[in-house]
Length: 222
Image (cartoon, rainbow, N blue to C red):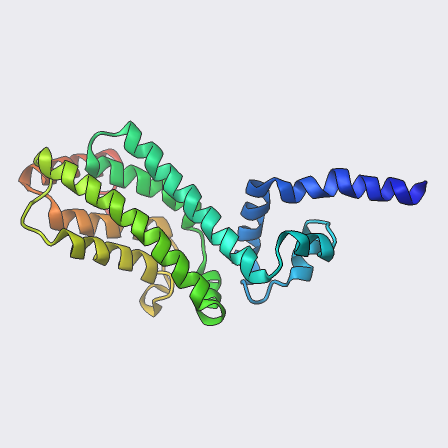
């Protein structure tokens, strides 16, 4: 009877921990930041969530599956914030600044060890995620650029496809570049990248609007 009770307790109490995918992946993301994706083992993960290793492997056959899930989850969380902001703000300049800030809240944690180990030990997973996210970000930025041109905020005489790729490359490279190793304020760095992009494509009217928004969001010193 006692054995049955323990089994029943495990089934009722421990399994929902993994079934709450948001909680599970958010906590796992935090663990990867602290220990690194290579260092953290499946045993460590099972112990942290108080589940058996067998239970963990029933959900994830390989550690790589876990990494895929974490990256997809964090990317989706960030992109969902972008979509929400675009519904709230008509101005494409403000939309980029605000959505970027909300996305930074989710993704701009100290993640050097996380990204460095991904690049070293799981490069295919890392690059696959980058490509997937990039496709969606490019679509968003091109739609916002078109809208900005229509209202007179963005220049038409720019190679926007190239400029967008520059911006995305900056986003992805800052975490692993030795030039930014000492940067502790990840959010300010992210804002500086977006401002660099916007400065390159705004018209005189768009520049005036951008300056107003820099004042509004206190970005004048970035």
